[in-house]
Image (cartoon, rainbow, N blue to C red; front, top):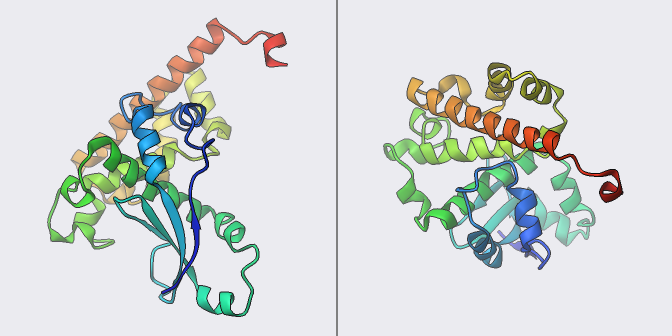
Amino acid sequence: MSFYIKMTPNDQMKSEASYQNLFKDLPDTFLSYPKFKEAMDHFFAVFVDQRSTEAAAAEMHDNGMMRIFISGLDDKFNNKKVEGLVGEFLSDAFNVETIYHELAHYLNHIRSSTPYYSRSKGSGDKFIIDTPAYINNTEEIQARIMEVLSDLNIQYYTELSEAIAKNDPKSYINFLLPKILYWGQYTPENQARIINRLYKDFLEKQEARKKIEVSPTPVTEAL
């Protein structure tokens, strides 16, 4: 496999403003700004040729390297047909969700200072995709939840905004649950954990909405 492109975050991406924007909808206890800065200082992505059609779209390593796989990359490179490859990859919603998922593992590693394999609980099958142990791997579940809550389109779902306005956590949770991969295959205990996490997210969004209603942004400031 050949490494094609190496990408690293610029200084703007490492800024506190970027941090606040990225994690405004997640608990403050998840990751501090210094830890986020540490993560971004070490993070880089490489595009790699992938011959197998069954491979994942991306994988994350605790050292900060994300490998993003593009099928037949070597052939495209040799034939000088590489223009627009990055944009093409990122235009696929599944690929973007995969990147969020893998970043969640990395940020969780930075937060906890513990390797992925040590954080994950379960049998030896916990790293084999689609096995019950993998599906119910707590580390994977955390990443799947963060993947959903980090969806760039989440603020545009009217179902969620209406549920918050009506103080209806059940509708809020029921809308998000099907978006979490493997939802129907979790143990009752893990289903309860996921519901509790989404309920906490509902309360945080509701509290944020109340603050905006109490202190709306003046029109002059908005302009």
